[in-house]
Length: 84
Image (tube, rainbow, N blue to C red; front, side):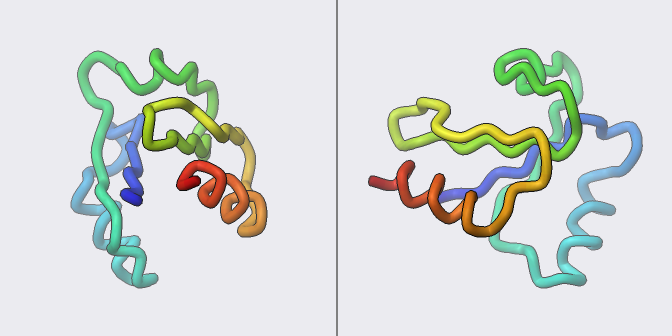
């Protein structure tokens, strides 16, 4: 499993600033990217708000979407389903 975080508003913070912030909390085991030029991630997944969580299974199918804070249990269930 690979976790990819995509910054949809890179004009507010650089990738380096986000990485430094996350490293303070030990959250370093994922890929951090920016949707800078064509907003492809925003358009592809119809992202309307910051904090949107999307889980994609091994076949590339969207299996979970939440536009609010996701509880640990919700994410655990969705990730396990995506891995099966």
